[in-house]
Image (cartoon, rainbow, N blue to C red):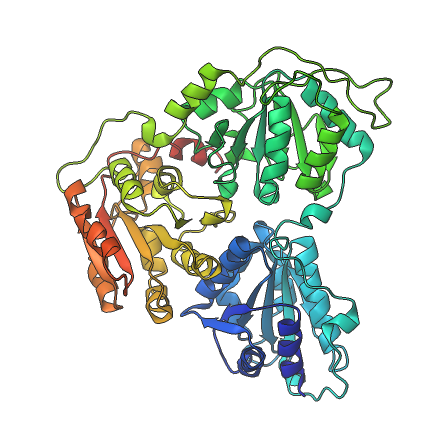
Length: 584
């Protein structure tokens, strides 16, 4: 057996079921080995798309994503997607052929390139260690939620492996499904008893607490809802974790630039803000504007280095989110007799508070969870319920009107993936999703052009849902080659292109300052015609009546994907844009 075949077999034995990439001479044998051992290989049309597909697949499946690329340009083509994955702490294993000969046209310092964007470099060092090196890289990606580049030198791939060990022989276990992205789930790292008791004390003394759950909380809904019920907290998420609390009457949906007016008001009025697996960065807090001047800020994260990285916190708790929520509930002690659902626990930790004893829990004021506030949340918290002047007309449709109509038309069982741009708030906040694994938001690197590939990877992870990709015209044309991939894979996808014939973010940011905009505006492009050339059904929408074609497609056989080319109004920036550009 060769090194390439041994690596492919090892990954299959580690539980890899799907891999993405482009085949070149450097990874030809490895990809064949993956397929030989039962791994589905999804070929993209560009390595950048392949990397983003693998990233999205890992996020939505909760497993380690796998990407295979050619040496040199195959890797450099994939770097934007790899950077997004690294910044998002996606467990992704990148298998890259490597040319070590300095005079080779393909030679670059691939390890340095990986390190420069936050990925972890590794290498298959010899035939004798090939399986162990592969298993180690896979375990690193799974356990540390890291993006790992495993270099496979060209001169080594055809070397013979005389005694092939199994990954199990190297102490590697396959991570439980759903735990790969976010740690060890029920068996995750518990916080120290002292830290749990301190957080319990903070929550027991709070009158208006708010929980903001991020990527690290996406497997902890049950634990967070139980603790929120006990402490009277309202619930919100960062954008990337949208959908986590769908159906909960105390959910405010998303905190940050996408927050609705009511959500922003309530978060700003809270006296305790707890970030659960959430960085509390400038996007999630609107550059700190959503944190009240007297609010106590707490951050819980599995990664100790992430605590306080974006803003000072009064209390940092290192631990798995689900395990920490359970530990805090234990520290609060048994629910006092007469304390029903939604009532609050108040009190103080006996003694010095250093021993993790139960908090003296006793009934306090009614806090947030009143019938009046529940009714107001139900009536006002969704963006689609916020009144707006419909700007449709002149052959263009208001993006809010478009998004609300699509929300009504598309089935509830949908998987929404969103590209970057001025338009992105509309699909992100007007299109509802059934759960936290039905919204894929590759925005950590803020790169335009990842949306279509995101939708492909997400769709393969969640075949039970209708994939919906929301793109701007700029991002759609950047990723246009992957239209063919969607057709080839037979995905019944809906792509909505919000076309303002511009890089809208730049238009609305620089236009009011009097700058020339001719280099960020473009002539009309018939994107629908381009999609038809790839084998798509299409609908061009300039007014609400134009969406009838979407209804016909949904009621039909859906044997070809559908592209909705929406000509949207372009007279204003989206509501979150001004806030977003404060970070530049």
